[in-house]
Image (tube, rainbow, N blue to C red):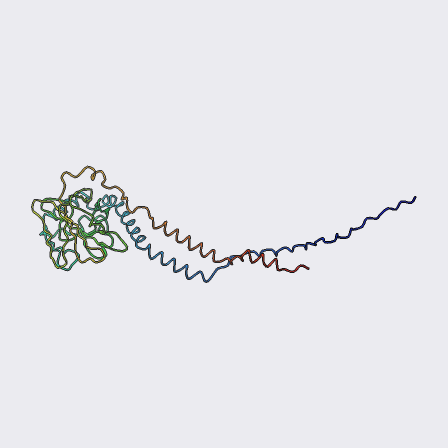
Length: 328
């Protein structure tokens, strides 16, 4: 009996079987390369300019306060190098005050008082007394309730009042004494500096302190007065009293009126003021404007970076494109 061996062959497809076409792979995604986006430049520059414009007052005021704090921090060293010595300078200041034919007037429609006092001793030169350095630095004024800690310079010229406070020539030098009245002026409402902007926060009963060539003089406020534009106010010494007056313009942004803060010397000088003499100023504080500036610049940089990449095609559109691709 002969046996027949079947050879291997591919079996025909069963009737009704479905043939699944092989899927074609989507083309490899093109690499997205960064290129500078010119259209993003204009809005970025506008945003940067707007941010700097908003932050300018804070930045400028902080820088001015920092520079003033550096002047104050070096004041003690400047006094130590002064020639004549500090003791001689103080003695000359008292002689100047004793010989002063005192007079100062805050005239109508003016913002800065006029000192018309003259010294009867022609050998005493105002600008050379209590002069700690070549800039005319005289001393330091601290007003705790108004967060004021500023250098005092000779005179009330415009450039002087942009650097700090000005002592009014023709009034007593701020070294104290019976029958004396020192007058110190300062700007308020400047966009680039605080100066006397917060002086209106001072109330009767508050104190302010002068530090002058090693002397510490504290005054307690007993009078706070706003002078009308059309009024004239005489700032005269009061026999038997040791007075000091701080002057600036008010209200902020208008500056039509003048505010006068007058204090009388406190005897003895409070120990806390003596202990705090010569301390490094605690202003300006932390530059919070720098945080805002850094955040704003980061956002602008992120926007420019993101704008440099082409937009991703939608995933749904890719799927539809693949489904419509014919199978060969």
